[in-house]
Amino acid sequence: MDKKKIIFIVFCLVVAAQLYVPAKMVFDRDNILVTGKPFKFKAAPIDPSDPLRGKYIVLNFEATSVPVAQGTDWSYESPVYLELTNDSSGYAMISAAHHEEPSDATTDYILAKVSYFNNNDNTLSIQYPFNRYYMEESKAQDAEDLYRHTAGDSTQVTYALVYVKNGEAVLKDVLVNDMSIKDILKETK
Image (tube, rainbow, N blue to C red):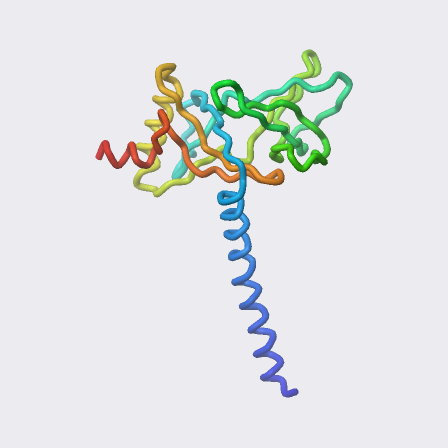
C-alpha cells in the first residue's frame, strides 16, 4: 500500500472518531432524558453577589445534606452515591449515601461529590453534578434574576427537573410553579 492511502485511511479514522465521541455523548444524555426517571429537586435561595455566573444560572437546592452512619470516613470531593426517593409532595430527597454504587437495579441514585463532612453530627454535605442551568446568553441574566426572586419567595415553588438513570443525571429544566423558566421569560417580554 502506498503512503498516500495509509495517510488517507488514518485521516478517515481520526474524522470518524471525532464524530463518534460527541455523537455518543449526546445520545447518552438523550437516552437518560427518554428512559430515565424524573426527580424534582426543590430550589433554595442563592447568594446574589457572585460576579462569575455569566451564561448560566447557579442552582442551589434544599436537599444538600444527608446523615451517614457513625464511623464512616468521607473526604472533600470524594465520590458519593446518593439514593433518591420522593417526599410526600413529590420532591426529591436523599434517602442514603454510599461509598459504593448500589447493587439493587431498582434503586434510583446519582453520583455526586462530597463538599463537607461534619464529624460532630455525622452529616454529609454534597455537591450535585447539575448545579448549573445553561441558557442563551441574552436570557441568562433575566432567568437568574427570576430564579433568585422565586427561590427566595415562600409563596413560589421553584425546582429543577432532573432525569436520573444508573447514577447519571441530566438537568432538563428549571420550573417555577410548574412552568418552565424559559416560558415565563417569553411571556414577560
